[in-house]
Length: 264
Image (cartoon, rainbow, N blue to C red):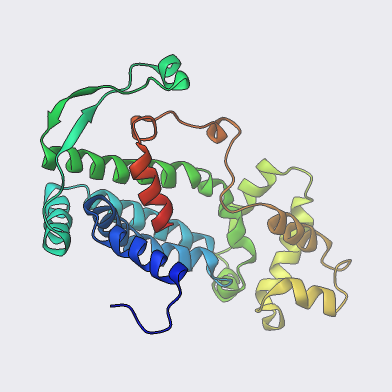
């Protein structure tokens, strides 16, 4: 319904959006990513939290991966597919496409028609490819998280437990020294004992050290804080930064790219 006073540009944009919302491909992708984002949103919130500890982040990453893998079922696909049919009607029959090779892809001759393909099979394959791609990227992005366990050393919420004789984070300290040998291990250990046994330090440390001018007194702890603030939580090796040539990316047609861009 066109409201009085709408200009031509607004009417055109509304008509375009309405057309998208009635498009089966777009609505199907909308349902797929709504399902996926519902699983990844809690992980995003944990990673953005200023108080989340490294163990909590690792646990949330693993639970998110498990939840994503659990959606890779015919039952989940059928639910999304059937919901899309209820919303916009049956899809237009799709055409089977195949990539001839990378050279042809560069020249723009990467696809050719091979006759009608079963529509349900086509969307099922697309759904599984999307889930597999996201699982792969999450796995790779956080593959180095286990090397950051030493972050627990300065989690102020754990200081109360660390002050117990048998609860000192020795393994995390050993990992730190093994990775960054420029620390004075014994001095750092002594400074950590001071932190753990004094409740005045059971709070976020960086501001406390600066305000009380303790950078020199707790020099190794301050050095560790500086290190932690410069390490990205999702660091990846140079090899992982190379683009992975996947079938999903190579066979992604223009219509699908437009749909994904609109959702984004």
